[in-house]
Length: 186
Image (cartoon, rainbow, N blue to C red; front, side):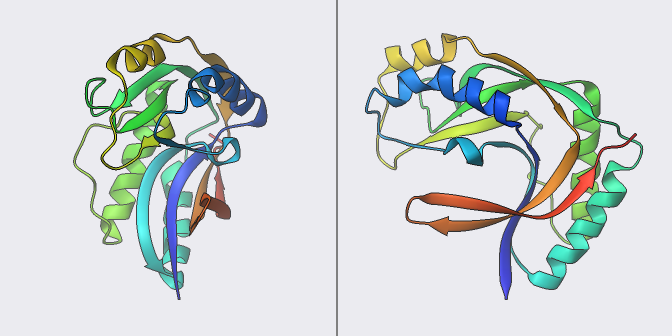
């Protein structure tokens, strides 16, 4: 049996609600976007894909080593953006304002994952929360994307654990279930 999994920082309810309020006007425009449900938003640190269940246990153990010495992180949702660019928006996201310890944590997770046979993605880590994906073959109006990226969003929160989630793809979108939590204790 395999599980599709990833490591991420959960977003607490109050910050999820602030994100939902700030993005709601854009979700109501009828854009060709698959919006992420509010209970599914998170800061992805590493995507592992489909792995045998026993490998998920090894990943969970590696997360415990990766978080050693890192305490809770003071983060904030901060503004909106699009990947790869505003002109060719494929993914809509909310930015994360974070201390350097978040980059250290993500690097440790990548290093441990590489040792388990899960190579890094090779790019620079840009902490964000994916909130929507543009449907295949669709384009968003450029002026609307610019307005989206200029919208304000500020919601501070504390991340106190890294969660290994199982992702299950369903017709209404992915659902996530925690497999393991590695506490950020310092």
